[in-house]
Structures are given as C-alpha cells and as structure tokens.
Image (cartoon, rainbow, N blue to C red; front, side, top):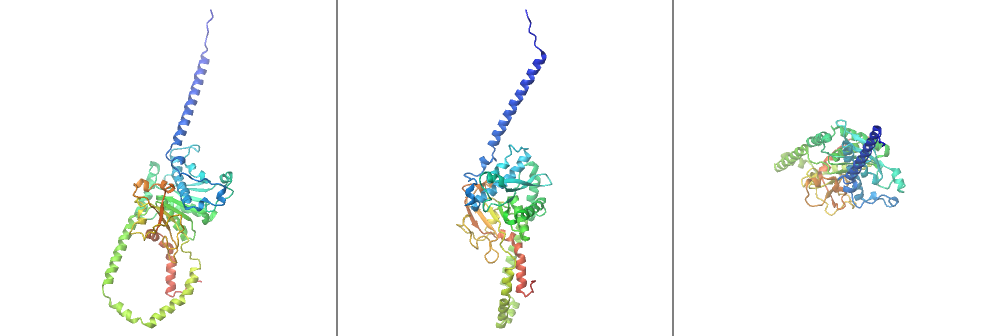
Length: 422
C-alpha cells in the first residue's frame, strides 16, 4: 500500500499564489469602485458641467463660437471651476488618471501650463490655461478661432477646506476691512504672472478671470495693469462689493451732501459781490479762453490718453449679498432694462468716462429671489437658462475712477492755462 506524501514547499507556493490573486482581485475592485465614484462625483464635468455644449470643430474657422458672448462666459466660468478642482485634486491626492480638473479645459482645446501657488500654505489659487494647438489640430481645428484668447489667467475664490481656509479667509477679511488686496501675496504673484503672459502673447490675446475673492483679485490686478497702459480682457463673476471702507466712505459722502445743501440755504454776500463783478467783458474773456484751448484739448485727447480701453465684464446676482452692492439703488444708476448680454451695447450703457466711453459692463441675473448658495455659485454662469440684463453701476465707476484722474487733472491744467509738455 502506497502513501502519498505532500511537500510543504508546494503548499506554501499555493498559498502565496492565492494571496497574490486575492490582492489583484481586491485591487481591481478598488480601481473599479474609484472609477465609479469619479464618474458620479458632483464636480465631474459630465455631471455638473454645461449642457448642450457645442464642441469646437472646423466650422469655428468660419464662424467662431467664441464670438458668442454666452459661449465665452460659459468657457471662462468653466476655467475658473477647473482652478477650484486643481486645488481639490491636490488636497485629495488624485493622480493624473482620476483628476477632475482636466475635464474642465480639455473640451475647449486648452491645456494647463502654470499654477499659481500661495507660499503661505502651498495652495493653488490660480492657473494659466493656454490654447492647445496639438489637441485642436487633432479635431481639424487648424488655427485658433477668432475671439479665443491664447492664454487665460483664472483665479478661484474662497475654498472652505482646512488646508486653504485660513489664508482664503485672511484675504476675505483684508478686502472687507480695506477694499484692497494689494497687501496679499496672491496679488503680487498674479500681477507678475499676468505681466509675463501679456509680454509673451500680447495683452490683446490674454484674458484674466475670477470668481468671488478671485474676482476681487482679477479686478485689482487688471486695474493695476491698465494704469500702465496694458489692457487685458477681464471677466469677474460674483465680485465682492461690501467692505467697511466703502461703508465709511458712503457715510462721508452723505454727510458732505447734507452739508452742501445746508450751505446752499445760507445767504452769502461774497457770492453776490462776485456775481456783480462779472460783466460782459468777463464772460467774453472766459469764452475766448475756452475757444483758445479747444485745439489743444483735442490734440491732447488724440495724444495717447485712451479712456475706456479697459472694459471689465462683471456678472452679479442680486440675491448674492457679496456682490449685490453693484446693483444697489444707492450705488447704481438707472438700469437699462431689456438690454441682453448678446446685444452690443451702445455708448451710454455701462458707466462712461467722457465722450460716452464705456468703462465697465455689468450683467445681472434676472431670476427671482434665490438662496445665497445658489446666487453665489459659479455654476449659474454656464447654465443654459441663464438670463442676463445689462445695467449701470456707480460702484464700479468709483472703483475705476483712479484710472481717469490723470486725464482729468491734466484737462484741469489745460483749462487753467497751464502749459502742457510737448
């Protein structure tokens, strides 16, 4: 009778093989589960991105989608969403294979070329997206469509996650207290990057955009470059409009208005004497003086002072208390009801600085009262049912006023007879 003897070495190999197979099966299950989670992630492009979006193709060489204001607004809002997700991908340690952010720029034939990092916490607060010629060529888009920027600097807003929340809120409070973000590290970084990209591609081929806090940075960075004569297309979604500094200034302006009214009610002997002293000769001399300065004023106007060359686009929602002051009755002029975003505004729409020049374009959501999280959400700006009206705003004109002080001061010197440099 024979006895079968099993080698212990063979048993060990069988057990190891079973363990390896089991690990592979578990690993495969984890990968499948991760892919399913990514596919249903609320920030996945196909879940929360724009619907009925037209893909770029050769037809855009004839009729560019970028010429449509709704399409441009949609794409730029998606780029800002991508910056939020670049930071979330970093925090959640996502790999290139399962990253959420790339899906928000790839469909538009753009690529990520640079990220802006806050040295205080290492977070990503902005990114440069550039036209991806290779990807476009693959879909027979042989050249960049008209109206599509070569590069876009997108800046995110506040992200309420523990790794970034502290620095984000720090800059929120900075704006709330001073209505200025120039003291922030992010302002300096964004300004340097935008200058560099503008030098590379030309300012007319570059765009800067931001949402919430990012819109505040975009506005002030764009304004800083405009003062240097560099005009970059600017899109601001839900820009912050409330600050202590602004409130104090409003109180001061109201007090000044009351004081002026009181003064106008008081009799003034000096005004009577001055009125008597001005005769026909005085009026004649003033009119002659004005006529003599008209040629010099016109030559000055054509001599390089380009008022209205920088026209930022603002997108606000009245139900959003962060940006609603732009349309507040006390801070805005009459609204132009019926002016839709895709209608080219005539001079006088927006706020002008002399000669009917438009200084900014303000677009307001026409929906009824919404909850704050809906009114402040970036998603509303790529919604297919978004209805916008163009309006005027004294607040944005006040924020841009310093851009035109040089022109006004020199014009004042001309009127006073000061010799102009030639």
